[in-house]
Length: 357
Length: 224
Image 1: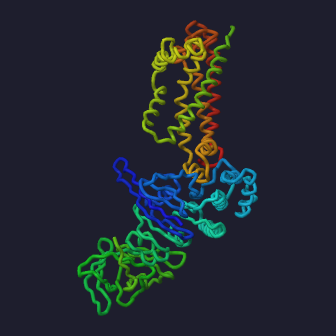
Image 2: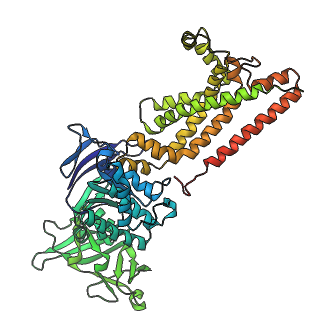
């Protein structure tokens, strides 16, 4: 279990605004994902947990072991925190061969046990033939296996991974995900991982925290967050949502419906039927998030809105259609010519989610 | 034509000793400047750089005031070792040290700063002490560039004239280094001696610069 309450302020340098990281993360998940855009403070959070950066305020606990507490002045040095770190795809020491890299992590074992421990770990990670190779003589996947093996060998109580698949291709990423899940269940070490890749978060994350601008914008399981983003920023980060500005024109509790005027982009305005929005007055302005794949698309869906086509982007499965006002629709099969000649979309009321700005 | 090779041997000895001292002290200073965030760091950096930009005679003057027989450090030295420091070959070592160490510290600092901080973080998280991080990670990763900086510092030590002549003087067979000997030969109309010494010292310096460039190349097949 990890519980981290971290506050750290960086004064802005020459004209840039100061940055404040202020997060409270509590997780007993096997794999916790810190997800967010670049500059949100994800890596900084990891640095604070690992002991590379000292927070201004807060408290960090791993399995009831106090790593940092600003009030009592406790701050264990990084080497005593028991956090195994893996950074990106290049964290093996380039001047040591693989065996020496793993040997470096055996300082906590008696000297005579070290060679056996290194060999055992190389075998478990299918690297036993490669001990004498330097990192640049290994493939990306082998390097990453080596980095995980080395981190586990140091007997950590927590594994911290900072964008470990950056620079790996799709196949190697999949290989890495399987490796990480296997290693996690075999060694029982909880993992905290930073990523800005939503697919990766969904693939691995059992618990997920979305960071935006140094704050936790939402916490939950990746599926919960994907299904119901709390804010417009989280919805945008999920990569599959349209965020629309809406004005309430009518509310009808009898039919459980509302009438909304949508503004998208600078010029696109249209009216749609939405869900009943309790607690809102006529004329209220709200932000709505709607998934690209939940918008009906065709030549004449009933009650649809006609929008101009901007572009069609082929996807591995189906296509993404970009319409006026920046509205994007994902369809499972490539659209035919008739559909593209006069595109019409329909927003199902239940697919419109109100999000905070 | 009889050439006295003493100045060349003295220069090589002085440069070797001063480079060794510069390396030991310079590495520590470079590590301090590159890794520790302390008050007055930029001032220390400026003070370390000063000998690179000051005229050698100014530096020589400062050192003469400090290390001369009437200077505070000079008096202390004389009371311990029973002989003055100035106008001995050891003074030439001090002169070469001040001439070359700024270059070494600057280059070693840049070398240490070029080491990817991820490696040091990873090492710390694996349980390594700061001592072990420096000797096993930072220095080996920066080693080629540090060696190159050392070769550069050696080449620079060979060439000092201004500080040496003020601090160690020009005593043939005792404190006359090769650059002073060349000046002396030209002044005395011994052009042939000057030409040979110039040629030899150029070849030695060129060799060290070539080695410095070779060493600065990376050995790991990737940038660190």
